[in-house]
Image 1 (cartoon, each protein chain N blue to C red):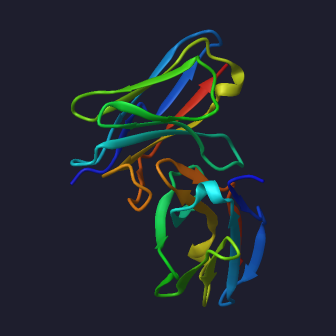
Image 2 (cartoon, rainbow over the protein chains, first blue to last red):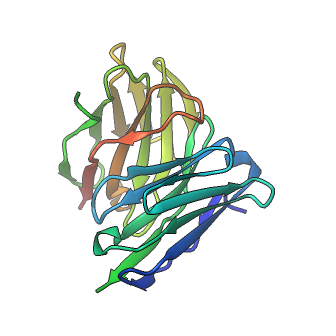
Image 3 (cartoon, rainbow over the protein chains, first blue to last red):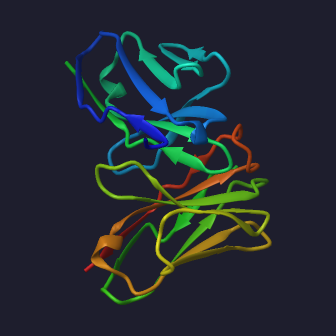
Length: 107
Length: 114
């Protein structure tokens, strides 16, 4: 099993809808988790840190389920500008990225 | 405050040549990591340096090497370039080396090997 796994998508979602991504991880990747957003041909940018039971920032909610070894990202009231690739990250000493989930918000 | 800076931003090299990529972390950050990202994939871990010592190495051949300087800047060297080395090379800056410290990325160096 790979350390961090994501569904590559693409997820094609109408504007205003709610979309959720899951990411699974193996034991070796676990200490902290993050979601990064990456626009085409740009560097990844930190979207949210996911500590303990999760956190919320505006339209974005991240959850961590250590028992089932998955992390989720929920985006409510999606905007066209949310179109990007979302990278799930597990961090210990080194940072391990998933392959990313592509999201297209449709007008 | 300046963010993570990488140079050059774009580079074209010929097979067999050598390349050096540079990264300056955020002021106060002591950890620098290097990643390779090919189109359609997530970044792949190459090296991590903390306090000028190598703290981790990914599954890359010995043609890849790196170092960190006393001012915490870092260089990534790739020898005997192959076509498959064409990718976006990303540098990540962290304050510490523990899992709870967030990483911030430079804009990357886009390397094309022809």
